[in-house]
Image 1: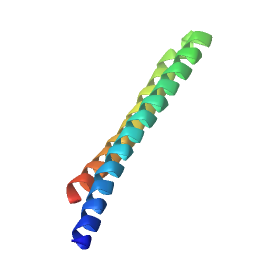
Image 2 (image 1 turned 180 degrees about the vertical axis):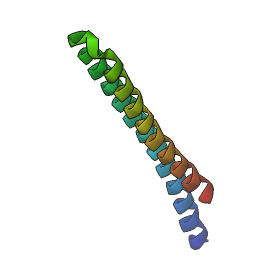
Image 3 (image 1 turned 120 degrees about the horizontal axis):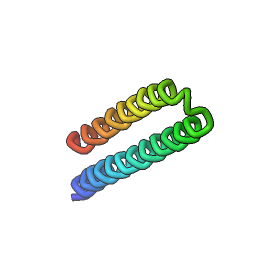
Image 4 (image 1 turned 90 degrees about the vertical axis):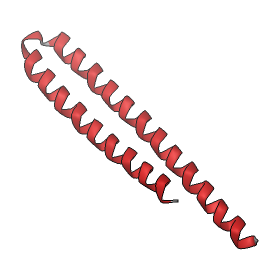
Length: 83
């Protein structure tokens, strides 16, 4: 009986940690992309002639952040399904 409760506790912790990890990933990606967009808008406002280069760099950076966030979300999902 005690072993069953210990295993149930481990499963609950796995679900909890996967949920917390997915939430932190989402918050981190949102903050990162928001900061990139704010900096890009500031740069475009200061130098409108460089808007194309700034926008390209912003899109590439946002895509990289989204890729990392998606990878972290998949890892959290796999941890959740493993338990």
